[in-house]
Image 1 (spheres, rainbow over the protein chains, first blue to last red):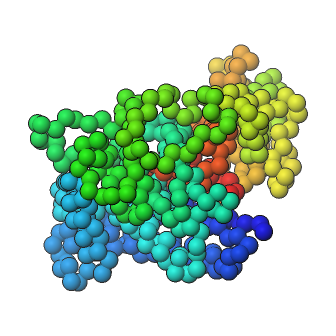
Image 2 (cartoon, chains in turn brown, yellow):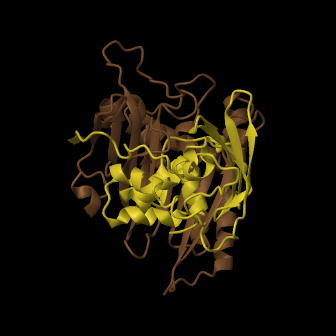
Image 3 (cartoon, one colour):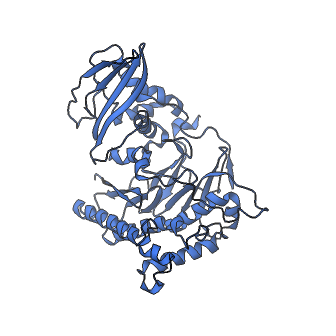
Length: 268
Length: 182
């Protein structure tokens, strides 16, 4: 029983989204149908991008932000995402703040994760049961590889280009998101920056593993800004987290699924 | 919470596989085969090398043993010659002809001065997906070798802060996507 692996990458949402789809001998999904599922997932990403992009003045999100479009006249996905933003703001104690930047509500900190989850849902509806979608570093999965039962996901090193900081072993259906200052532009705004009682935090990278990529994306955004203070404020259960400080220090939740070292590395 | 104190973070070895391969060919040669260690050469570290020595393993992946570093079996023979162009400063540049290396084509220019390689530039990279990228010469083999040689060799993907489409081109993720293997 030989497994097949289909890979595809799609430039969209200002980044490149990678698809990895597993077909094993027992899968009823044909290779052709699998390709169709990937195409449908990619098309869904483009469709959602057209709705939510704030880089295009005429997108529904842009028009809504300017007060030109009533919520009732927006595509139905828009209020769904806004509700996610409100929920995330509450669940992170305000460390995820979609109102932190001027211009109206900005879902950037979670809409990519949400869109990837939606795209994966489109693929699942077409019969996909083992796949991974990585949208510029935000990863959603369904099922898991037949041999190991876990997805091995590298975590990008925040300042060593091309290097990994760690490897995570994700169980089936998990999601992982990483947020950090090293992403393009320094758009991470600390909503508590003016509060003298808050110590400045120096988080280089924050990674979250959760069941939902929307949650992981929002929480990673919050932790990248607020560090351990944001961890303490988070009300989302069953999320594992891993922070890398700008001084190279690391701290993680007890059950963050770091991959066990292999035999070669055990001695190092 | 768990506070980990290990240092350094994964991937401390400097890997210069490409330069190592080219060094054997470009120095003093008017013609040389410019090739890249195939992806399967990453299997070598599995023989027990720790990550810090995997860099050395990669750079000694038999460039001296053969004049041709053969690309993966599925590709063409990748014949190539280099032309050397003396530069005014006394440096010599050799441009390897386009070389098949499994899933794309790469052309590199090696500049030597006084017998030492002073510059390696990727002149052209064409992948099967036809996205053109301007990669730092060290990035491509370093990325591939890092990914393949480290214990994380079998990762499916990389979670990181969002990269632009341009940054993707030189990312570990792109290297993984190009490999097309599980």
